[in-house]
Image (cartoon, rainbow, N blue to C red):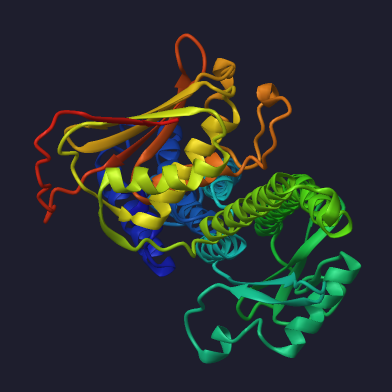
Length: 526
């Protein structure tokens, strides 16, 4: 009801007031002699109050004057005449008009305050919603687009944003989708807007409509500042307005500006912190790579150079056995450097996403045989015992990568187990996977370090004097995950470590293994 009355045209309110006064007069006239005239005058205040609440001050004054005239004409002797027999009624009319004017003013003021309170409540809710949405946004473009939509909905203005680029030069960043003419759609992209925005960005003071600086322009420009740092400029196109912006709307615009500046500061600082973190991690990684590679290269290079120099300078001093030993040292150093190069290249390919799988059906026994052949030269006096059950399912994967993974796991077990100890490689067939576990008899690790040994360049404190870059198991983890599998480590009771690789099975088109006619295959290398 209230919304309907408030939405009527202005002239309609005067018609309704006239009809309402006429209706009251028609209802009160038959009882005019029975009622006290003061009570009748008070009843005529109802149209005044109604007009002040729903239509404003002018219709309320009209209702007051019309009520006085109706009261004088129909109820004050002599009736049906505007003549006043008793001059005291003039004082009554004056008091009535004063009371009516005061009541109308108070009612209209309360109405304005109510509307203002509702408007502020709506603005506060809109600002809260915008603030809540901003807290979840971490992208500048999405942030500005969200702010522009809220400004268009709350303020009814198109917004344009100017942000500094990588060189620090202010440039047009984004604008809200404008409705209407093409000129309004292109607003903010012109040279004039860019020049004004640059001035505001450099001076840190608003410009445009309602200000002393470039007040004839079509927009209102504000610097986006937070904690004495400028992040850009926000410009609003407020239609064809040429006068100053109302105080209430200006406060809303400034609140939107402060929210935008704070959100931009948060996003920019988050980006800077991320860049700093990446730089620190990159520097840490670079240092770790240089330290590991330099150490891993220096040791075999020194041995190779020493052996080669001895062979060149003292050829007549060495027996054939001595020469073979020196040549074996050179070969071992070359193999060690080759493994380091392979690990570095494999890690680089894993990190860059360039490593592609060439899937084929792989037999577990063949993979183990190739891996054992590759570790044969540096396993020294350790015994490697292999347990492979009969009819192990074929695994769909990249044969070369799976062999490299097994070589790295076996090399790690050889490196951290004492000479003349036993290393056990066990294959188990499960319902939907094949697991390969390598158990050594080394010193083992503290419980909390087993989850970290697959991190790049991680070296356990208990590794002692054992050489290495910390890349072998990290590469194993990457290869296992590329195949959809997992790799884990745990203590080997009573001492040592067990590394287990689990590879999923793909039963579709799986080749049928040829029965060997024997039980579990077990063999060992001394």
